[in-house]
Length: 325
Image (cartoon, rainbow, N blue to C red):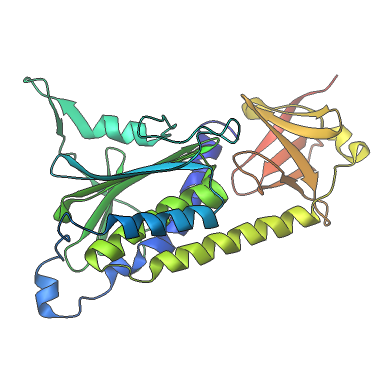
């Protein structure tokens, strides 16, 4: 919930899951010595974009997305753009190539990746990169530099990427340097359960259709997203309204800018501009029923000295500083 910690933490967790499904097979051993010597070449510019768009639109519909836009670029030119859906649920104004999306943390990476030259143009910087912890098994090398993640795989291919998210928006920017190809995917959905899976699908569709990499992975992404959504529905069917008498001793102000308050029929967890209603699970824990971290588990308990605390499971624990008075 805190603007820096929770958004980044949940995004990294979701991205790690998506990456495991979406790019692991890039590390597969090449079929021949010739394939190992040189990465596959891009298909010519007359790629069947109509079929590509049809597949993307089908995934968009299956994931019940609201709006999205994507672009592929090469050699300083835009190869293809696709816009889908609406800018918002109401009114239903279509997404266009000029629609603005919140890009989240990708803006930091883009700022770091370019520097202004004396002649007044932007050119890529060449950062020193450090090995990153937690590289996936089979990945030849994973490095991080200036806000970008670079993953190198057998066969000579590499992916340089970063993602971003904010309430109601998810973004992805990635490059395949050996193939002179860049991809941007923007959508107006929260990162989970749909936002990250949509860009993961598009990325792997590009890899499989253009380069013969990760064949079959787009279908796995669709299945994984559907399973995640089913899990969320199951969670929602079990969640019930909060008992005020049980929660009342925990109302008040907490560390990190949190507060737990009663608003009408809801018990709401506040942090900065976010207000997230809680519901209770059968075993007595709580769950966020709306917002950026919908489905996240929350526990209310006390320290050994009796001070109430809120644990956002897997994210952070904060102590109460002031009761509701």
